[in-house]
Each structure stands twice: as C-alpha cells, then as structure tokens.
Image 1 (tube, rainbow, N blue to C red):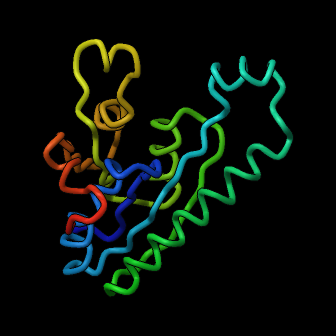
Image 2 (image 1 turned 180 degrees about the horizontal axis):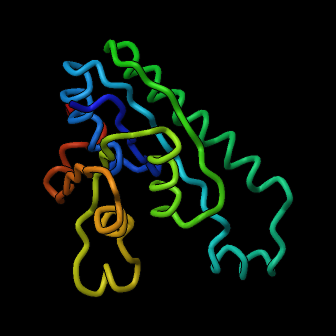
Length: 159
C-alpha cells in the first residue's frame, strides 16, 4: 500500500492536525514518515521592514529552528513506534518544494492539513494544499481543519 508518507509542516497547530491521521495510517502499514519543513525566502513585508537588507544568517537561523522543530515531532512519533525522518527545504515556493521533496524521497502519499480558506482569503493568500493537490503525481490526503478542530487543539485540551 503506502511505504513512505511525506508530511509537510509549517510550524502551526493547523498543520500538525494531520499527525493523528498519519499515526493511524503509517503505524499499521509500517510506512516511513518523512516530515518536511519548507523555509521560504523573506516576505516582501520583511524586506520592507529591513530596508531590503536580509542578514546573511537569516536562512541559517531559520534552518536551525526548522530542524529543532522537526526533531521534536520526530521524537514524539518515534516513541509511538513510527519510523520517521526529517527534511528541510530552503527557498522555493512551498508547493513546489513539497512536490520536489515527494519525488526526492520517493513518497507515495503526501499527507497535510489545510485551513480550508475560501473566497477572498484564498485569493489573497493562495492555497499551498490546493496547489499540491492539483499537481501532485502521488495521492494527497488533505484534512481540513475547522474552527472547531482548531479549538480542540488549544493548549490544555486533549488531542
């Protein structure tokens, strides 16, 4: 069935909403889980705020933060008996980096959560999940996180 699942995470609780489903699918199948964090270049707002000057170590700091973040999730999932590795992608648009990582890791499933924006929100911010879904050569499991599921993930509540 599935041997390797790519799980893109952006550091948000919404993105991490996919993890319980990954556990339920990867565990019984003994599928390897590849956690991915895409580090984007500085946004136009960040560039304006910094007068167009980006410190040379910006990517280095973001890379270390991403690796630390992924290592913590890897540790939690490994304790549950899952085979997990991590990967950080630097610089490209997230959807493109996710698809490139899927190919590079030979993933046969991409599993991710989405906020499910519609209308103006999607027009302004786009949808990484939608782009991945439209262009992926492998199956994509999308879980839409709603306000109710976001509230369930609040600190102090059980996941």
